[in-house]
Amino acid sequence: MRSLLIFALAFLASASYAPAQWRRLGNAALDLQLSGLATGPMDRVQFRSGDARLFARAGAGQWYSTGDFETWSVERSEPPASAPPPPIPDRLPEPDAALRATSARGVVYAAGLHVWRSEDGGRTWANLTKWKQSSLLGSPVADLSVSPNDPNEIAVAAGTGIWRSADGGRTWSSCNAALPHLPVRRILSLPRGGQGARISFLSPQSAVAAAFEWQPGERTAWRPSAVLASNAALLAASRRFNAVVTVLQTQGDWVYAGAADGRLWISTNRGADWIVPTFNPGAAVEAITIDERDPRRALAVLSRRAADQSPAAPSVLRTLNGGLYWDNVTANLPEVSAFGVAADFAANAVYVATLGGLYQADLLAPSWVRLTGQGLPDSPVLDVRLDPSGNQLYLAVYGFGLYTSIAPHRSRDLRVVHAADYSVRPAAPGALLTILGARVSDVRAGDRPASVLPSTASETHIQLPYDLTGTGVSLSFLSANQRISLGLPLQPSSPAIFIDPDGSPLALDGETGVLLDAQNPARAGSAVQVLLSGLGRVSPNWPAGQPAPLENQPRVIADVKAFLDGTPLEVIRASLAPGYIGFYLVEVRLPAIVNRGPAEFVVEAANVLSNRVRLHLEP
Image (cartoon, rainbow, N blue to C red; front, top):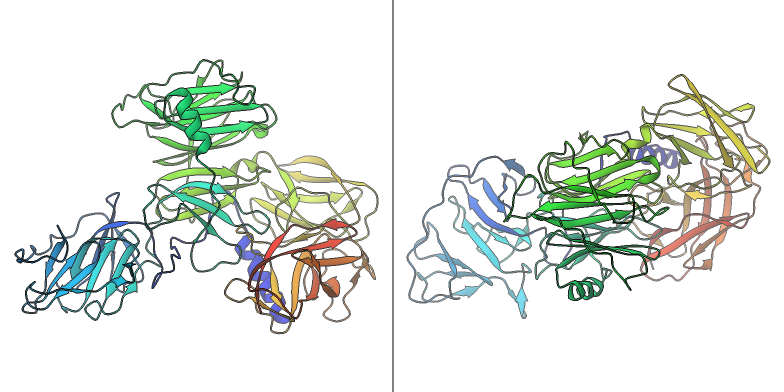
């Protein structure tokens, strides 16, 4: 059980947040089923004379360098020019192939659709990357460089990143695992249930799928996803308006549409009729968000068109009357293009993603503040999303991927959520709750004290007494010397499986205590331990705020069931987790026969279902 406690502590530490403290969700690598990990397209590569340090340039112009071909540093200036290419031989392996000479006499390399090597000055060529009908590197090669120290060491820039060979092209290794060049453009969906976060790219390459997912429990790379919203609706709207429609957002019967020429249309009857468009010369509509409670309220963000950089072009527009009039609320936002918008209309909080970073404002009096913080790279932010409850903020940071944090506006609009998954659901006796937005004190559940656990400046973890009864509980606490009271619904059980921000559950192998994920799947017939909150009362009763005993742990009174892809599992035990405060442990036995891959796991207590999570299985 000691390993269980260690993993629980480490898990909570990794999932802990504070305003402007960011956690990376995933990395910048792609799994394209090549000989190694890929990343975004690179167009230049060059060894430096002397130390043979490798430099690489992304399509947007940013240079990076590496000395060990694993870790990369951002370079502020361009490296010295490389040696001129050799004379063009009489016979090229491909039309317009790029040529590179070596110090070895007669050895020449060429790069095009494939990488080629000639040892007789170009009279004959050997293809170094052809595999069946495609390339080992997954895309054409934009550039090639030869090490000044070894004619057999070469590196290439391709649409799938940087690749290196140390044996003249016989074998290739990836240099992309830590190269910060993921050209993320849109957040297609956030982690939910057994689904991970999904993203799309700024400039889709022929070698790269349109959408990628960071699966719950993933530790290696983004993987292609077949799920991508159809462009059929955008194409139909473009034909109707005779414009390039870039955005369509719906809320009930309301539809908002934006185009690349800055026009905005609104329909109140699912697109049967449209309000005369609003014009915004010099700008392109990039994103729209609608108030789910009142679709007459919406925000649109716009980028500046390259042909018209007029400072009069707006970046952020707001409507309060269904598009009859749009307010320009760009205010003091720097004159940079905006690409994404997210808003918690109930809290009057809005976030805008721009080339200059992330900005926040209050909708009642827009004055923009740039958000920075620990862990957030200095790079353009091209999209921003809030989870459905407005508790967690997600950013698409160009080159680096996804980042997430507690939504900063929670510091002025406190929210009580389940500590296990930050969801808003009824409380239960013994539940671990989190007050988002502040460190509070003197927390009471009705007329009884609640246990306050170790907390941060932006969130306070508490535990309710195990023997609470009734259908509701009044939660009160001190924040900034003010007493705040909130009423919470209470039910006998409100189970929630602990997950981290990418949706990975806190599940361990029952025999070894190893944390289970995509790299360490659960095996058929094995015991799996899952940690939860909110399973309700226990027998014998236990004092809140005290670690559960290491032996003879109090058992859960509610009837507990577990399901794997809808199939009932044997529940070995359901009790408090030994040695820890407020955690429940449910141990189940997997079937003797399972399919390899992810499966949906859910717990039920007193006829109430938990959040759905993904377990990775191995027969």
